[in-house]
Image 1 (cartoon, rainbow, N blue to C red):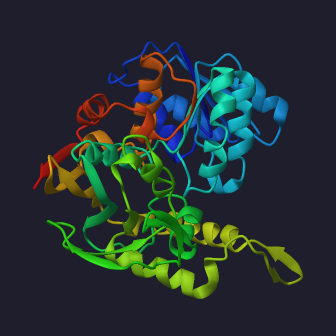
Image 2: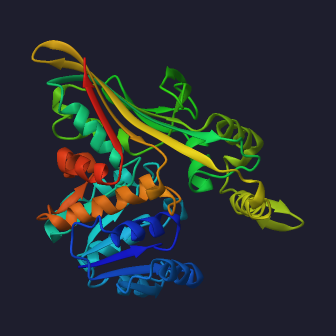
Length: 395
């Protein structure tokens, strides 16, 4: 099998490659085609991993012929190009044209509705696409499916993600993932599902405090734009159970949360609209990225070792066998040496899991969100292989 990764030398793409060439693979991979605009990053990744199956392809995704050539002949295409760069639909359509299965990592739901609308075209062409298949979205969707499976009738499912850093306070702001994604999570409106319909909610609204076990403690959660709320309440096996409420809320580490709020207050939430400086138009996002990168590079010696703890959980309320029930499913990711080579092990490992599960079983043509495609027990077994801790309780 040939697995092609677009943006394969970026933070998430490189992590997926690491997982694909590890001893956790469940499919016979003959080639991992890493396609990226940065030859330097690709060569560094290949040298680090030293796996002869890795093939490097210089790629500008804005060039249609080059994009088609990169995808052609693959068993599956994993799109790791940052969504907010604007190439999502172009790559999605290129996979359809090449009749190659497709996976992406999502991206705040920016293109989710447009992609889902192409289900019949993909189905008619015999092509499988699973969209939003990282951690959040991705694993989180499967968590929601696990909750829904515990209830006969569903009133609500509330989905949360919280991260916390343990160790000496970091004097340097280190983004947890792409700066544009974090800013969008804080500055953009979100679509949530309330009173049985999708509604638009203001940025940083829906504030809610929950007391979680240490190291998270008391956490403030807020609405954030994501794709889970666009697909989960409409999914077969969930929609017909009468769900009236579905929300997705975020909590970033306490001190980092304050920094991102401050940047949005300063105007960086409008990161795509150029500002004029000395007669030149510049992107606020480009400026912020360069400043953050320079600060991280020049102050690398001041960045302390910190342990990252994540908890992804969904709480469903409804009825089972006629009795009121609350079902909670959680996935906890604690520090482990396994994750040290990864920037975001949770997202990249889940991208690898999704691609391999698609390849390991007869494919279902069409466009699917993860909760509609993956079998919960099979998916959870792959998480456990990667030392993710799964918990479930029904009260």
